[in-house]
Image (cartoon, rainbow, N blue to C red; front, top):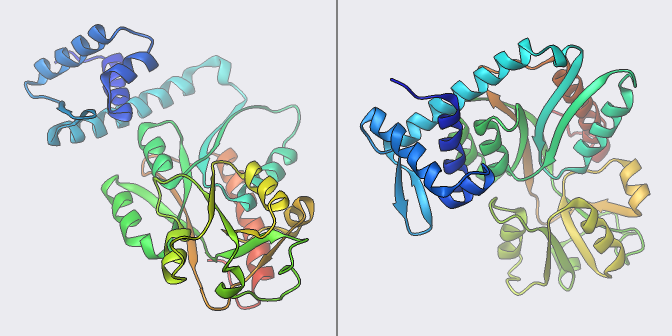
Length: 317
């Protein structure tokens, strides 16, 4: 058997992109050479790893199992290399994906500011959806991640995590709140109802890979024609909430510091109660570093404060 590490990386990239052409471009190599490398591996094992579909390629049934093993091998070898690299002596590395959750971004800034400025750090910190995070951890792009999903979709995501043989741990089970500008006419109300939001524009995170809260809200509120604006980062959502009259978002609880800074308020909605879950995920073989643990501890500190402030009876899990 003669399959090298580079060939494994090639095949993982093909699975990730679903296209030999795109994978070749990402790998800075010609498509014929990549196709040849894949064929060599398939010939070595005597079975196809990929099959052609209308939109590109996808793994065969045996290919899926093969690629899972390939990812594990790549991750383990990269960890071995990092241990032996003299350049990494004293370097604190962090590779994490999180949902577009403002309380986590807030905790991350606290964490970075708490570090000794003499420390050498290398941080890969990305806000993205649950599916991208799961795939990123599986591919080794992130060491670990925190994913977010609606409580109603828990079975779907837990099944996916079990299939990937991931370790997972609930970080927070939280109530979704309505977020709007402090100058909005509804900002003075202690509690809102769906009828209050009848003619409002809903701002929605536009990543359709993940089932979002808004879809169920719209169905329940019988407002399929409701106006919506789709955004893809937290910065633009704040600008829109402040600049577009009668607009709102469904969000996890914000810190008072963030609300004040962006001139926003958050309100519960009495006749529509949604809950979300933030869950820590990582490969079972991965051991959190002290650097990783310090960030997670900061996230949990902010979570605890918010859990107490949003409801006297709400307790962090």
